[in-house]
Image (tube, rainbow, N blue to C red):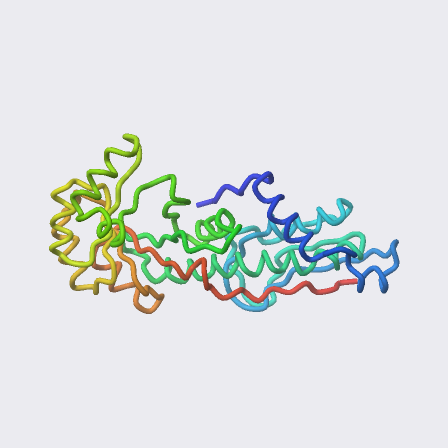
Length: 283
């Protein structure tokens, strides 16, 4: 499925801020000293390891913000599977602009491709089950929309984007509210009719209480496949079931086969390894 790109108005501010951080107070001293102002060049964004590309719009925006005269040609758009040596895109035009924008472009492209690749690894591991891999709010500051986009590109889905688009009642909420019933009833009274309520549970007894209260979704935290299977049986379609807790590609399949609807994985956004992508000079 083709994933709609993020609007440029969402991409430009974060790329601009990153470039300004890099340029500091004096600009690119190295490039401006060495490269003639009228020099032209052509470079290639190349994959150096297998994965899934994501974040091209961020990378190309970096070059264009530095110099609108830089031309970009995409060979493998976001969502493409990569193998080492694959050409992702070419950039050509003023050499100073390309070199100055290089690091920012690669930072975005390598990181977001890493997020998409990690997501794809789990999505492939659970293929054929009904479960979907999804991300969490454990995102890097300022990059939430970008990282959640990369998860979609990698074949995953998004959990809530922030504190304002759904209710997720966790153990500390329950403790302060004085119990699950109090927490759920207060949440239901405090939000609109379109806002879903999810409750985190650690035991089957807590799950039974959640189902009695009619929550929309249950977060089954740190349960093994056998307990998850029992939990899914208890729910019997009355709520969305979401498994969480240290899910890796090698552990994902048994969890998915328990019958859960979703598998939330925080490390996809807070610590996925970058995908090795380089900018190679073509002449």
